[in-house]
Every structure is written in C-alpha cells, then in structure tokens.
Length: 97
Image (tube, rainbow, N blue to C red; front, side, top):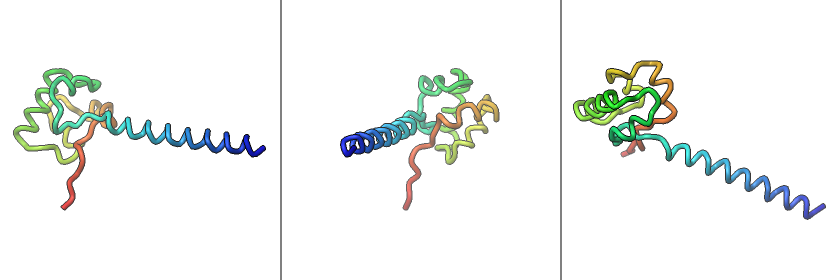
C-alpha cells in the first residue's frame, strides 16, 4: 500500500510539472509585436506580408505598442483578426521603476 501511495504522489508531481512547463512554453511562444519582423508576424492567422509591414511601419512611426489592443489601429487588423491572434501575441515585459 505504501509503495502504491508513493507512486501516486510521484505521478501527481509529474503531471503538475508537465502542466507548469506547458504553460511556460505557451507564454514563451508568443510573438512580441514590438520586436517581431515580417517573417514572424506572417505566421499569425490573418496577417499577410502587407499587414505585417503595416505593423512594423506603425511601430516605427508611433513607438512601441503599449498594449496588444493597440494593434487594431493598424490598417488590416480589425476586431476579428485581433480576436484570432490575441492569445498568440505579447508586447513583452512591462518595465517597472
């Protein structure tokens, strides 16, 4: 019985670590819209080369995006496209003073 309990605890710990690692990978896989080049941006559903170039042009003209929702100000990125990609993008770490 004690051996079975240890195996069960080890199995639960393994599942916990796997879940935590999966969450960390998902966050790391997000595309930073403040640093991404065209090649990265076109991997997002609904973003073609023209829109990707528009994202970079907007960023160069207005500075870094302050929130991912600001992406909807770029021509070619409407609410529907934003809804498709919002979980795949980031603006990076916010710096605190």
